[in-house]
Length: 164
Image 1 (cartoon, rainbow, N blue to C red):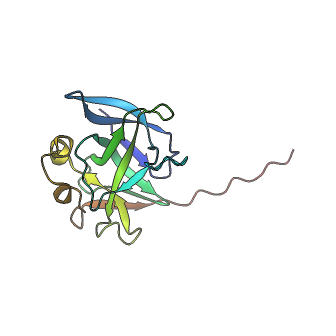
Image 2: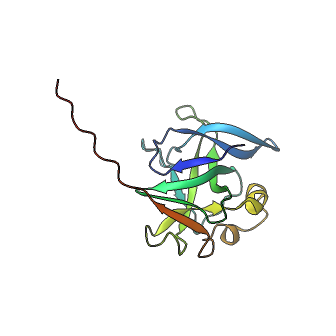
């Protein structure tokens, strides 16, 4: 399996491979990013705040090798790939089966750039998340300082208008 860069500003309906438990089996499926809000509003929700909530079912993992936010990319300092903790929902009559990523307080590496981050799980945590083996507050928490390697990217120049 290839883990790829996750663009935090990707379109909400961008499709990605997720890993989930469904009908008792672990499977890999490709789903669009963005859940319909519980209040029925028209705008999709791509991240869900995890604090104070439980997720007894419909958990998923989103494999990634790094994630990008603005002009910075974040990857594990050891070079390994990882997972984002997520949730998925079955299709409804007016919304496709889709997923969202859970957020937590930013760890010390990411805090200078943003106060929150997507919940990153290392490989050893994948089964505990999918199978609900640990309470949410034990697994959905910031990783230790020094976990992430941060790389700054030059800003892309604005494309000039072409005269015709």
